[in-house]
Amino acid sequence: MGQFSMEKPKLPGSALSGNQHLAQDATNPLGYLRLGECLIAAREYDQAYGALHAARIFAAEGKGQPGTLAEVERLMALPEIAAAA
Image (tube, rainbow, N blue to C red):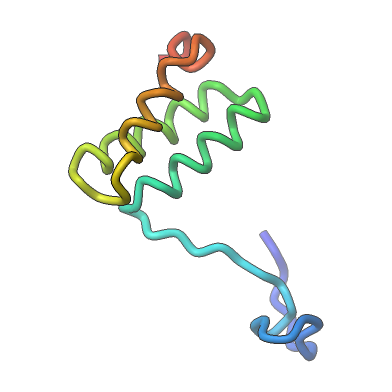
């Protein structure tokens, strides 16, 4: 985790310390999809499966953007991810 700093921002428009952070809605499947992609790239297939599984659940409930469920299903069909199931 990052450290909190009261220094002046180093980047215009950034909050407090100049660090940039990504916020994620806990029920938005797109965040879990992107996390899964990163974990696949890092060859962390068990963790990627978990992130993609969460994305699939939320996308199946109609949350997120159109096409997200299809993209999640495509990634979950990868042999490395299917083997982690």
